[in-house]
Length: 320
Image (tube, rainbow, N blue to C red):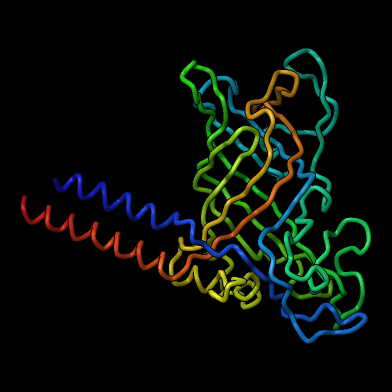
């Protein structure tokens, strides 16, 4: 009976932690009114939006064995140092099918940038946010000596294994279970906050639906949260405080989902190059990042469920 109670309470806690009643709207506070040209509006915030959008990401997937074999370890990254550690180099390479394919390092910022704040309430009030490609570039202009345009770039290294989803002994997709996705602020060289990591996302899992891959996890400020600029940067558009303040109250409370395309989920021989450290495929991805701040009630429910689980465990211990 106690085992059943424990499982039921654990399921309740898990359900509470993943309740759909989450607040996706966000805004960014740069600490500077970048709309100073031509007319300042007195606000250091962007309008409220609900996703960070990206397109044209050059994704490098490294398979430490045959992708067709279930359980093969996979590393996905856009970080040149990580790519190099597996024997990557740019150029035209022979593929397993006997043909050739072109491999290259990501072009920054065009293939490493957040290029849109999706679904803004006021598209004219992005407080100077730009994609950084073409005109205007990051830092263009002169607002308070900081330039008049800023943006966001990202780097990631996520790991997982290939999975046989239908029991035929052949891999059907990759399940990711660890890694990080980091977001950086980009502005003028004179901006003291230029290049700072403003968000770190910890990967805990993934699921795939047709050609869409959803990678998920929680927000982490344990390494960069001491900086006031970082603390105040991302905020709930529903008035639930900054992401940092929510993290401070509950370190796994702020969740996220990265939605991207992947086609095919497992690479074909004509896409794979046998580098010294693994089989490598490159592809371009489009997608979006949604960050969810929980309503206070959902956190309370999770707390009650976990408290109940602890109570059941204590009662079981007393009966031994």
